[in-house]
Length: 266
Image (cartoon, rainbow, N blue to C red):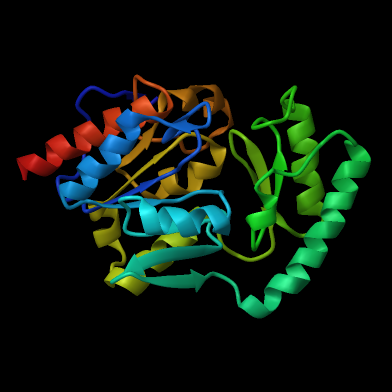
């Protein structure tokens, strides 16, 4: 396989943008550790623009965009990006706001069907600050965590209703609208930096941990998976180019250290 535990991967020395998942990539057991947070600041101070790309909700992303050392945050699996410039928040949505209400009604019906099939299942505890998607808790607070068969049945319910759905390490996220993490990333780069085509490939890197990150790994040659991606490798058609030795936030720190080494060498 092409993906190997990294020592000194050969990456583009032109990296200017670092896109990263949050849960189980930046975090360990739900916590953002000091090493990962320091690495965010190290990349920021080196002039690399960091953009989290997450399934987390709009309410979380508002805070992240304002308070973390990031250039922007892409949330709810590509439904929007938020960025703060000169202390002013910019919010850009992937679907017209006029569709939000109707999409929520359709997602509510899917929720009813899921609960009929699995009465003990709960939505994510952060659902109340979501604008675009329905998040089903599969491993964050769920005890026991859902098994692969249960996850696939829930994904099938979303798909049967014409919705998109992806499983992360903690949630199943379902939504209406033709977007994902990658389409929102490319839209952000085009809108905010007039960056397209090969320039995107050369200047961007991505770090993730679960199957819903696969479109990003497929697009970016400078792509990392933290070590906990290994359990999902049999499911992936396109794995990350490099896999770190460490899991979660320590794996993120490992990848950023290598990126900064390449960055300084230019």
